[in-house]
Image 1 (cartoon, rainbow, N blue to C red):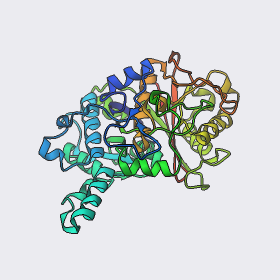
Image 2 (image 1 turned 60 degrees about the horizontal axis):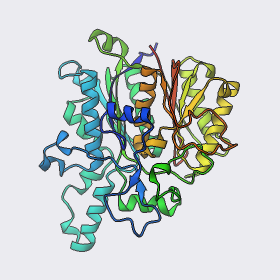
Image 3 (image 1 turned 90 degrees about the vertical axis):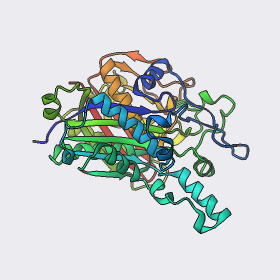
Image 4 (image 1 turned 135 degrees about the vertical axis):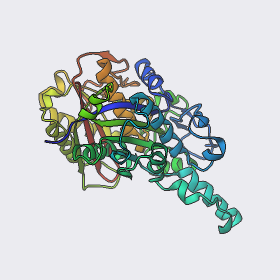
Length: 413
C-alpha cells in the first residue's frame, strides 16, 4: 500500500498578493494583477503589460547583502517556503532532516542574472561579470537554498518542464513520500522571467496578448472568444506535503489529500498542444485513476487556461473527452490565470494553492474577463464571479511547451 500524502502548509507570492491570504482574497474579489511593466522600458516592445509581483519585501527573506547573492526567482521561492513552513507549524525538530526533501519546479531559471552577466561581458569583458553569475542563474539553486534554510537532507532538486514544472514538482514530491524516502516534502513552482529577454522571447513567437495593452486588466481572458495570447506572470506557489500518519501524530492541520498525479507527453510539437488533446486526456485520466475515482467524482477543474487561441479550445476538448456528459452536468472549470497571468514554472504551484483553498472554502474561483462565448469553448467556466458549492475533488491541469502535461488531484478529507 502506498503511503497517503496530505497538504499541511501553503505559501504564495503572486501578482495578486504576497501571501496566501491576500492571494485568495484577490481571487474571491476577481481582482486582476496585470498592469504596465514597471521594471524596464517597453517602448520598443509590441507588448507592455505583465502580471508583476508588487511591493515584494526582500528583507523578509534575507539581509540586503545576502539578498544580492540571490536571483529574484530564488527570493520568491524562499519567501513562499517560509510562509508554507510557518503555516504547517513545522518547526526545527519536528521532522527528521533526512526525511525532509524539496522539489521545486522552474521554467527558465535566473533570467535577471543571465542578462546582468551578459551585459557586463559585452561592456567590460569576461573578467568583470558578477562572481556569482552561475550560482544565481541555475534552476536548481532555489531548492538548494531552501535545503540550506531548512536543513533538509532528503531529496532536493528542481524540475524543468516549462509551464508544467510546478505541477510536476508536486507530483514528484508526493512519490518520495509514498515510497517512504521522505515524511515531509516542500514542493511547488517559482518563476521570475519578466525581464527584457524574457518578454522579447515570448513576443517574437507571438505568444503574448498585445490587443489590450491600454486596458491591461482585461488582457488575460481564458476561454473568451476575443482572447489573443497569454500575459506573462511571476511568483511562487509552495506546498508542504506530509505523510498522513506523520501529520496526525504531530497534530497538524490538514487541508486535503493529494490523491492523484498524472503525467504525459504530447509527442507532437514544441509549442502547440496536440490538436486532439491527446496528452492532456492521458494525464487527467492517469490522475483520476491513481486516486481510485471516476470522472463523475470530480467537482472542479482548475484549468491550464492560458488565454491563447489554441490552448483554450484544445483543453476544453480534452475535458469534454475525459468527463463526457459530466462536463455539462455539474463540472465547474475555471482559469485563475485570468487574474494572475501565466506564471510559467510557478503556475502549477500557485494554481495548486487555489485548488486546495477551493476545497477548504467550498468555493469555485472565477474566470474573469469572460465576455464573449466561444462555441469551441462551451463549458461552465464560472464566468466573472466565483460561486459557492460542494467540492470534494479537484484536478489542476498544467500543459507546457514541449508537450509536457501534468495533472494533480486533491480530495477533501
